[in-house]
Amino acid sequence: MSPVGPSVELSRDEARRALAEILLSAHAGELAASLAYRGHWRSLRRPDEIADVRRIELEERQHRTRVREMLDELGVVPRVGRERLMFVIGTTISGLCRIGGWFVPMYGAGFLESGNVREYEDAARFAVVAELDHFVPDLLHMAEVEWDHERYFRSKVEGHWLSRLVPLWEAPPPRAVIQDSFDAARGVGSTGNGARAR
Image (cartoon, rainbow, N blue to C red):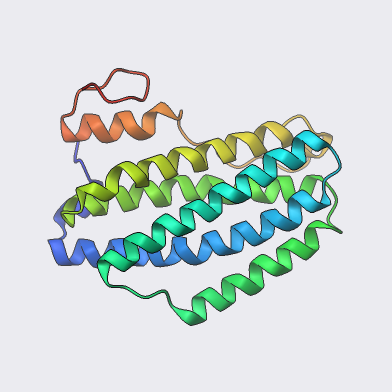
């Protein structure tokens, strides 16, 4: 099994460019997500759900900050057009949360978070080929946090009566697989619980 999947065939410079593309997308996407979550938690009524989605908003903002640091190190500037587009999308979703009921924002958030897990895993694999191994722990951690977000929203909607009418998105593999499969592919010992053996 390759430590980096298909990216193993790329040169260092090609991997850096591929990594930069993912990070540019993630940086803009985290802006849209954090804006959307702000509208989402403001539309909720239960204090526990408000606190949960506020925490998720904060974590998305933290991801954006860390991704920006990585882009800075790569010497890559976020694309103004993409950032503006994601600002508009995030702001629009934020407003729609207030009129979209409870189920739609919860479902939409879970669906989107499921894709974010893979995005950060792919970025970690490109980082290895790009000889930016110091990016890997943060990228895998962000993948794990996005996994947590997906699981939270899945747990909210799977018991709702509308989930019988709207099929749930495909569930990602278990959380421990994110770190364990990456370590196993690189030949690093795994403890079997998602933590690396030291």
